Image 1: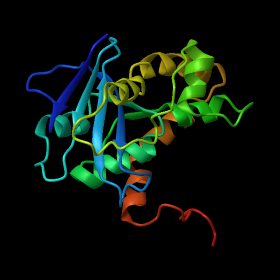
Image 2 (image 1 turned 180 degrees about the horizontal axis):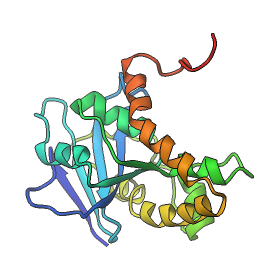
Image 3 (image 1 turned 45 degrees about the horizontal axis):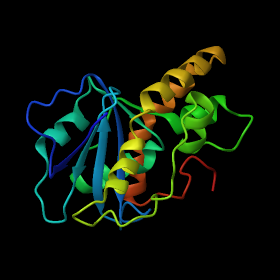
Image 4 (image 1 turned 90 degrees about the vertical axis):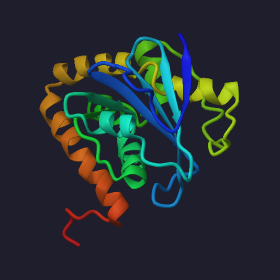
Length: 204
């Protein structure tokens, strides 16, 4: 298990396969205000690839190509935020996405605890610390603790997806889940365009 840290972009010719887990770290929880600092990616092989994004850098062509590639499934947890942050920074709208938080809400209706920490513990018996969730991700020199924390957000998402897929099939909710995943990039785009809280489907 190795954590690789890159500046500005993924390296050339890095092949992460056709299904990757992605997460982001930002300076805060408002994707319109708070800048994107880090993008974490894993192919599910135990390694994590972390790309530091700096304020004055150019668009990262390799990372953007991965985000836009319709043949690569991107697994997120609360993808609405990450997709919005990536779109706001790179003007690239992810496609072919899967969100473990949405899947959890569709099949774990017996609880309101759908955080990644809860899913890791219940579904695959992994315990992770969220102590560094609020951290200065804009620091150009990340600590080893920050790197390990950021990596933990993507290392296990493939296994979580497998468990949730089994439950989606069992509860006959895989079609509605897929419809939600298909809409998710547009929901994130609406957030950036100024409709983060207003329900445009409501009567009022």
